[in-house]
Length: 149
Length: 149
DNA sequence: TATTGTTATACTCTATAACTATA
DNA sequence: TATAGTTATAGAGTATAACAATA
Image (cartoon, rainbow over all chains, first blue to last red; front, side, top):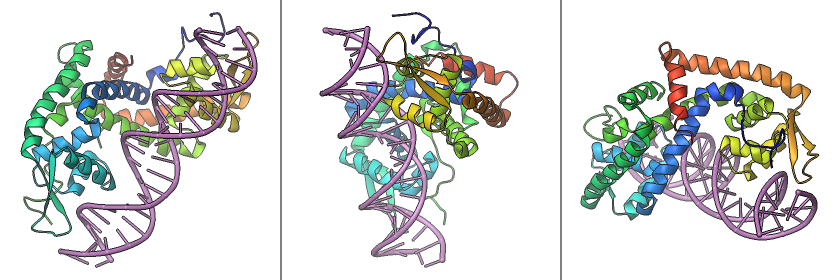
């Protein structure tokens, strides 16, 4: 089935093809679906990996502080920390300075798990980054960082 | 309130800061929320803009063909085309070759609307791209395009 | 048998508002 | 009064499965 009608070949993307927003969305979709394929058996989504990373590198942060670091609303933290707690990766400890808040810490198992997880995630990125030339990844990270605010 | 506990300052992002997937997500969030701020009064989301662009540049395409071009499932097209039809921007014409499918065309109003819309969207991108140096945008579009599959 | 548009459905992500217990 | 965690809720966005009409 082909002709001048209905076919999906030779699509003209027009302005869309030069739009950074669109290219970002497509690229991010590729990274996220690839991440899911590589890490879903561990029960870790990209979002959970973010929470885990921040908690790992900054022990004792409150949920709200982690949310702010990631640019999310604090209400989203509840389910995320719940899940990480169920996986025995993270621990809510009552804060001694403020009885309203928790201090987040990786469990001992969380520390080991994170080490292996980061290894897996880095390999997944390296696989995707085979499409890049030397130096392009570092350049991308720097340039995209300018749009993080 | 500050000290060694709970603060959101001086966050160490660790591996996350060098992850392309994370940087892509944050950058895309910036572009999409900015797009919404600039175009939500017109009732056009980034997704609808994509459908409109493909339909504009490739008149007579079927819904399924548009979905494939955008990398979406065809079931998502129904609501999208419904909305664009309600806005009098797009038209479903019965296909003469295949009575199962529609051929999508921009209405006359859709043509004018799209011209103004693209202008607005390009200005929104240019505003964000003030953070880039000359040539970097074109480079980004090319590099990100390698991750579109 | 396969495909198009459609519907129903569900799941994720995200944001908002309101509640409680603290501060 | 303001804030931390929580809950309920709602809105996108996206995907799957199944159905009727048509190929």
